[in-house]
Structures are given as structure tokens and as C-alpha cells.
Image (tube, rainbow, N blue to C red; front, side, top):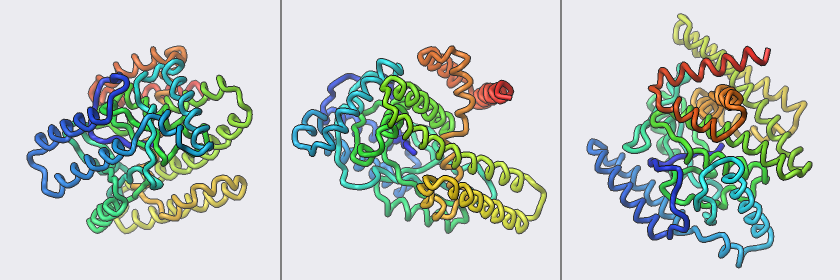
Length: 377
């Protein structure tokens, strides 16, 4: 999963070649504005903003132009950064994604993830808790640059009675506030996944809607999926195509398990059964999910990549963490088809939908998804 967003928003296009010092100044200004707006924040809340500032400054301090990184890097990293340069160019000229300095710099962070997101949901509800920020609005997760801090927050939420999930994040978008660099946390992933991630994060710069994480992440995921399909076709590498097809098949199998389990849990939580019965049925639903996973894995060993997710004992929060990125994909796919598979026209149409209030926006997306379902029958 890729995102991912820190508080902030900006126009999709940013000036090329901004120096790190300017970015640091922009971040300080954004942080100051956020703190001024957060007048009722607790000291703990203020500490959260400061850890975000420090984490972003760390990334800026470690980033350098890719040409400089390649001058003293090992051949494997040099080859990969050259691939990233080509992917970055393709994103703008073929996918109409922002043509700016994002992903033209490289930062070696020396750790596996750049941030850790904390998700939480009530024990008998699927909707995740939200956290609200002065600029970004309300989002369905809380991000930390320090894993220990994320896990402390998760323990507090669990002690309060919520389901919790902590997920490591390899990249996030600052929505154009800064020139997001290529990070060591994902640069050596399989090349198709690197391309998907870059397309996803650049899509956040095209469009970001306050208070609607599902809309934002599903939009970016759909764009990244389409972008990967087109990039693979243009590259014409059968080995990469086979690798991407296998990964897509594994993701689809996993996501179907999530969809089916969420559907069953929605029925349980909406029932008139007493709480104890709902808790029993909830446990049975997750047990059935795990059994289905083990059965599917027997026929497709590659699914073992999800073992760690299952080992964390899935709950409402971990299901929400997946659904945020996928729930609206069918609707966005249908809208893209309606626009003749033309991405600039699609972006323009989605901006109109994004400008609606949330109930109206949801109705349009529900109708698009229903239309796609009918067309597929």
C-alpha cells in the first residue's frame, strides 16, 4: 500500500528545481499555519504536529538530485534510478500526471518504511475512526515517522476498546507542498510496483478532497492501475508483464477475501442480535476468512506474501486499511470508460464530482459502480 498523505494541499503543478532550503521554509510556514489553526489542540496534539515536521525535514535533509546519487551509487541502484527517470517521464507525457520535480531526487532513509499509519475502528463497526487536521481535513488514519510512537498510539486505542492496525508505509504524497523524492524504502521493489507507486502518489497531486480518504485513495489506486497497464504495454517486456499480471492476480484474490468478509461483518453488525452474539459471529467470520486464505494459498503459493498481514490477526481496522484504497475503484473505472478511456477528460470529470458535497458525490459513485456491475453481467 502506498499512502500516505501528510497535512497539506497545493496546486498540482509546482515550480521545477526548488532547492531544499526553500522546501524547508515552505514546510515551516505550513506547520506554523497548522498550529495556529489548531488552537484547541492538546500538548499531545502539538507534539504530533512537531513529529510530522521533524520527519519531513529528515527526508528533505537526506534527498539529493538523482544525478548526484548515481555518481557514487552501486550499479544496481544506478540502473534502478535510470528506470525511475523513465517512469517519471512517462507519467507526465502519457498519463497527464503533474510535470514537476517530484521523484527527480533520491533519499536513502536507512529504514524499511518512511512512516507507520495507525488505523482504528470500533469493535462492532466497519467505519474507521477519523483524525482531523487544519489543512488536510479528516483522514482515516494517523501517520507517524517513528514506529514506536505509532505502536504506543495503537495501544492507547486498543485499551479504549477499539480494533487497531499499524501498517508500515513505503511512500506518501505531500500533495505538491514539496518535491517528493524517490525513497530507499521502495526503490528496489519489483519494477512494476515502483511504477504503480509513483503513479499513485502523483495522482494525489492531481486531485485531493478534504475529509474523504476513500475517494482520494481509490482514485489514486485506479489511476496507478491504469497507468501500470499502459506503461507495461508501451515498454513491451513480456517478463515484466508476466510479473505484473501475477501480482495483480494475487492482489485480486486477497481483496476478494476482504470484500467478502466485510460484507459478512456488515450483516452481523447491522443485525438485532445481542452484543455477545455479534462478537461470536465476528470471530467466526474472521476464522472463515483465514480458512479461505489458507485454501487459496495452497493453490497459489505466492499468496504467502500476505502471511504477515494475517499473522497480525485481522480485525475491523485492518480491513478498513485495505478498503480505503480499493472501495471506489469500480466506480472510477466506469467513469474512465464513460470518458473514452481518456485520462485528461477523466480527471476533469472527477474534479466535477469532487466539488459536490459528500452525499451527492457518493450517489454519483454508487451509480457508476452499479452501472459497471450491470454492464459486466
